[in-house]
Length: 173
Ligand SMILES: [Zn+2]
Ligand SMILES: [Zn+2]
Ligand SMILES: [Zn+2]
Image (tube, rainbow, N blue to C red; front, side):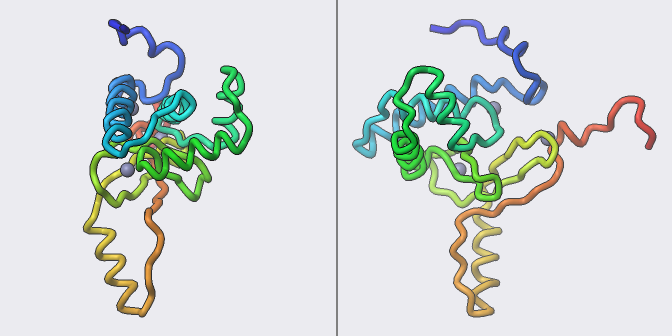
């Protein structure tokens, strides 16, 4: 059992101020365990580790990055194994694919039926997911007016996150 989570911020500077990322990881894995039981699925070792690795940060992870990490740890990291694990996690709703980055992001509300949109930071490449059913419905309705059937499941928007937007010290205004 891990007791102390305060000493692991030395490694990377990501998400430094905003939150304790261990909470994100813990709750994502707990949700995954529950969902797998409910769906009668097994969260095998490689699936679980893949999910953990994707959750290492809020920066989406590419399939080949994941493959490399799993290989380092001695997992069977042949591409089919990794893709099957990714497919499983996608189908279970535990991760999302961020199409514009061709990479995978852990879902923070996998237990709820939701249509998300993604806010992608151009600077740090962190991605925040927001659940906004209204926007989705409005877009579907709007497209339908033009006879267009919308199929995309996600909306991806780019910009600057709160951390990156902070005025740099000593910079001119
Ligand atoms: Zn987090
Ligand atoms: Zn989600
Ligand atoms: Zn940022």
